[in-house]
Image 1: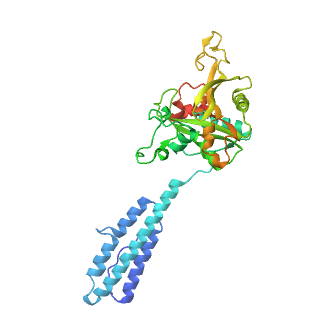
Image 2 (image 1 turned 135 degrees about the vertical axis):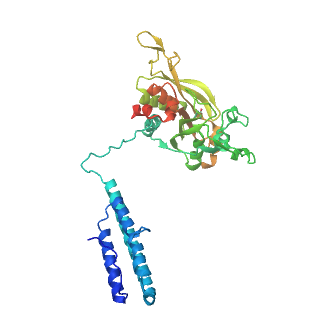
Image 3 (image 1 turned 60 degrees about the vertical axis):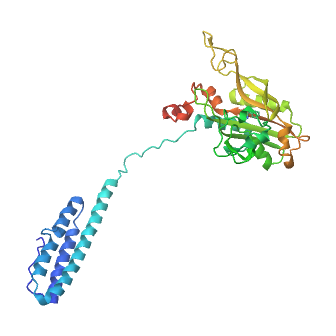
Length: 373
Ligand code: PHE
């Protein structure tokens, strides 16, 4: 029999106590079978609905019908009862909510699990790692430096004359609001990884053999072969008696390790403020093998513009003026010599994978990137 509210005739303490505990007992028993939101709603309505809920009935039958002398005592009882019933309904709500969410969260442990895709290296990162590891095998260590650089490290200590065009806003992305500072302290986005040559020589005395991978920025609008952000790998070797022959031998070895042993290298004179003499290194085109022509119908080879040669990096012997800036740390230009080189990783990755638009590397389209996984 479901609980119904009895009329009270006896308002003695014992009778009130009995009526109250019967009510609580019934409420507790009903709360125990609440399983879900629907149960909860009818349980709550039955007990707490303002119109004709059990608490309202108790209010009407027990309180309003109480004789004057018993009113106070009955009031206290009924209030207690309301608090108890409210607590029981709240308890049932919590149980119903957790039973519902437990059901929702139930997992079928017999199903096979979700296979998580293991990521792959981005083609540029992969190329960069390959190049770095070629030099690591020759005993080079890896160094790094900040992308936001000062004019001093990016230009001045690398022997760029004050009005060199590379300092021009055409190429360099300067940080705003630096005009108050002396020129050498002004901040910019490094335009090459060469500033890390100076930063490393300030920290480590010779002999030194390092490679420096990193991102650099130039004010170039993005197109199929340009990007305002790109990646370089710098190299620096300083010791006693380092010669241009060491530079040639090292880079020739590195190119063969990267592009295959049949690749030939070729140096052409060039200019960089921080190397003297300076050169550009060319390798035989690894698409057409150096012939400038492709396929059975001798189609013109595009990557090398039919020349058979591809420019891969800038290099040269460290200019003695550069050593002057780190002379205190053991780099006396009369005692040490060295070579440096810097290559564009993105361009090499483009050529290596036969990609025809540099922008694919930066758009993050998984359909493109998956091909390198
Ligand atoms: N820093 C030069 C550039 O970005 C490349 C370079 C590095 C040339 C080291 C010579 C020596 O173009």
